[in-house]
Image (cartoon, rainbow, N blue to C red; front, side):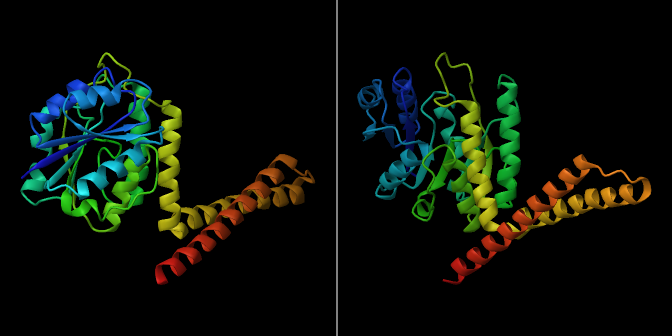
Length: 292
């Protein structure tokens, strides 16, 4: 089966040529999307023999993936592999990544990183685990590494994927959409190198995490608003009522009126009501949208 390797890249001029050359050893075709780089990423990728798509300005990884998938949809290759252009992943592991698709056991294969990634910074490991848990809630599937950009896709499902996020949240949005449409998702352990000698992240980790988390919360809220917003709202209301009742009991027994407990109870009740009404509204909108 023929393989097209797709590489989203932003300011990876120092290493993109090496990544492309390694990809060619195990791929039939390589395409790079230069997402508005201000260095020589375009020239280096082109010199390495890749077909290069160039964005006039930096829009984000999601837009780069959309451009790459459009190219892939018009290609004649059977399997589409996405790999980051920063050199963290090993292109020589592509044959292992595509095995499940070749054997028709999966539609998407994720290269997961964490079993022996001992050199991963602790803050990144912790943040990724939180995001993975949240993403699994949204997809209702168990995936160990929802943030990995090293993936293989069957060409047949590329045109069926629908994702709108421009930034790093696109990786999670793709999985949520794939799970919703019943696509088969599997994983393969891959090697990851964090000390590549060059900067491997083009975005502040806090901003990155916040962007992905916002995407997941949005999908969770739209998919199951009563479960993930309505129930927490009811629980918050009950806790607020508990505080309020304690204020009344204390006043009857001692004549002391606790202002702090009153403020806490009132805040919790109001917050819970807002969450419950928001869940009801989202549920109505979601139901009407599905009906239309």
